[in-house]
Length: 435
Image (cartoon, rainbow, N blue to C red; front, side):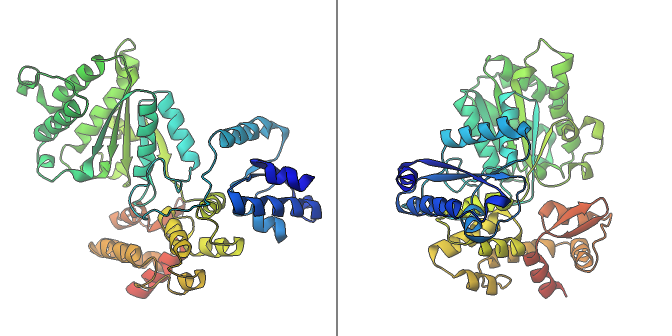
């Protein structure tokens, strides 16, 4: 009877505690649910872990560890867990009975079955929903900044808001040579994308200067509609080296301040989203005019074990729990590397053992990624010196080289004055090539 009910279910909520690990009934029920899921894509298993989130041993662990789960510790967690279960059921994961793989690299489309949400996603969408003024999406390359921005744009569209997308990586160096040219380019791009009629001949007045002209344009753009406007700017790092960087970001800061100084103005329905990697304070001269210390900071982190387990499930579970542990020991939770590893094994291009054996070689699954990092860090002598020093000592130096390594995601900071290589794979590869 219980087996029939499990096999006919769409969802199984499994309450799992350390004391229950020896329960043969729990093992049996989970094995039935997992078997039926392999056959028809359902039921989905939603584990609720009691007390702790450490990896579980035995048959229960082999089923539960790869899955996304929530942890209950006290009765205060009841409402949070209930909300998480309801949200998951309302937007169920994709069943992979007919798995179609996607190319790995670049932004992950918002509706991709391989997009795994992190806590940052919830915070980002929540801040957008409240029309907050400045949202700062920070993270090294291939950490998911552009993908998260795409999710934000999809949410804004679902609210029927106006959105503008600017990828500064697409701009040539010519407009960055002049603030007047750059600001005019931005205004023209916004006017075109939003189909906003603006009399540049009459309203863009030379004596006002670039900042005031762009400010007047943005005000007019917002006032042209009661619908909220979200301006998504990606790869904002490209502006940091421009002579007018402090002025431009100071202007963005002023739009935030205007919410307080002009409470009846239009600014409450204007949101700026900035995606970037480099520490802004290295380039912004006056931090009192910087948007990077007033906006909501959304710092993208590596996947945790639960996220890697969930992504593994979406790839039809090519790795078992022990292999997931071995993979994370090698690459941490670096999103691109995790997805690359799962894709290679799921496609049958390599076995997991072959993946591990060739991981730090140029002809291995991660070779292109590792070579790109090596080439980028060897372009500047100071960065190479900082990387060599990092391989020998965890002490954080004060040179620009260290900050560039942090921004590139090659190392990460573990305390105020110490750093370490981002993952074991990076340590091995860099040790081979820089020793």
